[in-house]
Length: 103
Image (cartoon, rainbow, N blue to C red; front, side, top):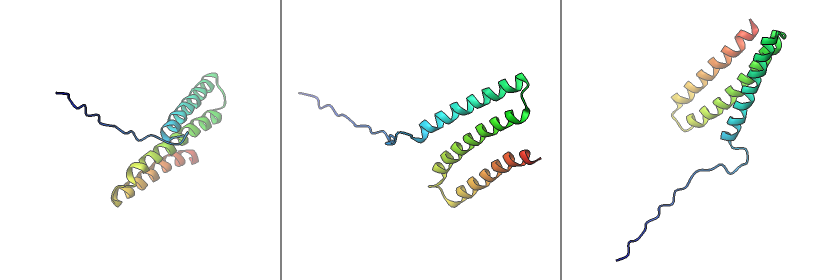
């Protein structure tokens, strides 16, 4: 008696585009690490603090954008309370980035 081999086909959800969000996230994280590294080296050398701050803020802004996109992808199918929470959290993050720059 021959055994029937059952083969389950597993499908993976893959990104059909060349620049999937996961790949963009990796490269933004790498670019942020590079910017932070350059900012650290400049601060150790004694370069103007404004240049260091600008590099760090660019890195932080890029990472916040990626995280906000990923968070929205999670929240968009949730009830309205999740969307309100998302907007509240995003406003707090933006305020905490902008207020120290103005003071």
